[in-house]
Amino acid sequence: MSPLIRLSASFVALMMAMGIGRFALTPQLPHLLSEGQIDLTAAGLIAAANYLGYFIGAVDAMFSRRPAQVRRRLLGGLWLCVLLTLASFWANGFWSHLLLRFGTGVASAWVLVMITALSQPLAAGG
Image (tube, rainbow, N blue to C red; front, side, top):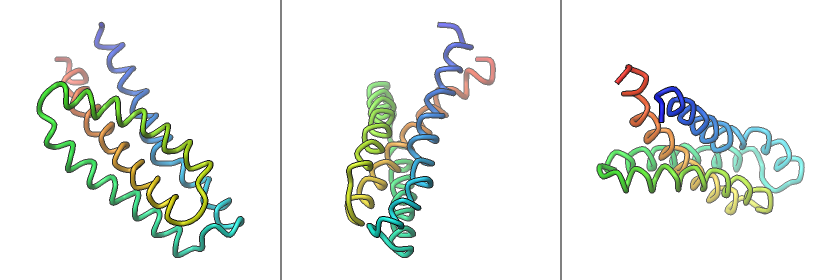
């Protein structure tokens, strides 16, 4: 596979992880607030859980040394970003959204760290 195709695939994976995994919460918040599922304090806690998930996912990703570990986290992270974001459509209440956003944070960090590590040599021309 050519380096350009691999870089393009990396770009798409990052768009999925960041677009779906990270920024899908922003348009959901006004609806959750207007439906009375959460208040502003809960919205802040849900966002904080998302960031805590990023931190834990990034720390966990540092220990992925073998190709199978990298592959598992990369593919798992991509699937979890999509599935957990879809699940948030049916979630109701503070705790379900908090747990889903935490999981999405972990999954997004896995993709971000793995894709960055895999694509840097390609971007450098290696």
